[in-house]
Length: 464
Ligand code: ADP
Ligand code: MG
Image 1: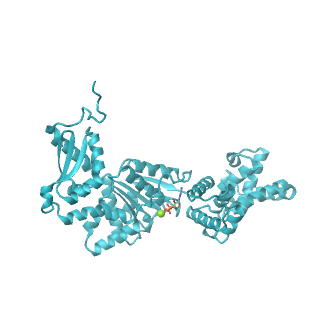
Image 2: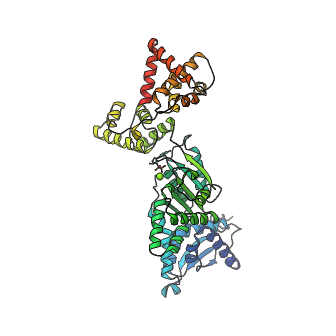
Image 3: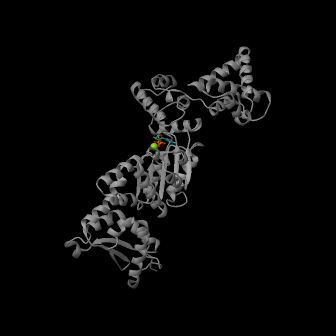
């Protein structure tokens, strides 16, 4: 009996010459949906195809088109042909007759289309290190992470438009570029453009100077995923920029193309934005990134140290996580200094070395802001009382003690916090509760050496 050929074409394949035209039309339609319109009209409109003996041959009118289609789109063509049930061989060739003469595509249009595909997306490269894998999740950013990864997996779907906001250095650009990197990897036929809003503005100004607005628009709209970073930098007076962002936004929204916007605040808190732009930005999914909590900071530091192949002991990681509380970038800077020190001293970093090496580094924003959350974590661990009990109504002696210690620490460490604020954080209405707790702990410290030592230890950890 004859063995079946492993590569034989399944019976669903469209191989009949009579069907070739229909098949090619269907394939073109599929490709049209995946490729920017301008690019499609330049590169795909004039292709022809035939199927002979299970082989699809696509013929390009000239060498430029051939090179481009072969290099950029062959794998997309194969994939799309397979979704139509065609598993045979596919070749792209150049029509020798037409290619010898004049190019059928006007050179100017051709180069414009090539530019529209490459020039802008390459202008600011996506940082390849900003991926979802390398983004550490925690309660402060998990919603933003989930929304960004949803938008990346299904661009143009239900996470569109996506608006990410949060303070400096909390991972907005990282998440945006992670979307870009993911899309480029998973859907190579989709064009991604990452653009800080200042660049959008300066491109627009240039285009206006050159009286080339339509070219600008074609460039910006020929992409499928548009990532517009830091819109808080658009000034109130930049009417034209705001107008153009508004139209660009509408274009993406109406054409069901993915748009992701970032800013340092939610849209309604950006007074410099014109009302209609604010309301457009509010149409989508709005997520925020907050400062990472202690555990997330520890995880970020551990990961970054590992990535840098830097050996640091757990107490150094803990020290760094306590010292750098509001942004990720200073943590990265600190790790670089430690790496330099380790190389210089030719030994792994210990806590003593770390403290010395980072002595000159300013405290974040000049102050180290302790939070109630930090205090609860430290008290809970040192006095072995659950955080939820500390903030709850439980009056058991050791729980009440932990609560009083927490209030005492909050009063002495949280700069600018009012007594009512601290009382509120522990579910109390009356600010005098904090005063009583404070006095009680002061008295206890005088007589209870063990408690005094524990409190010193907690102060030391919180004050780094
Ligand atoms: P933003 O755009 O919000 O100002 P960035 O995205 O530029 O912040 O982040 C600053 C630095 O911190 C980058 O190097 C980024 O990789 C890193 N970073 C921020 N958040 C995280 C996180 N959750 N996990 C890993 N790295 C992070
Ligand atoms: Mg940024």
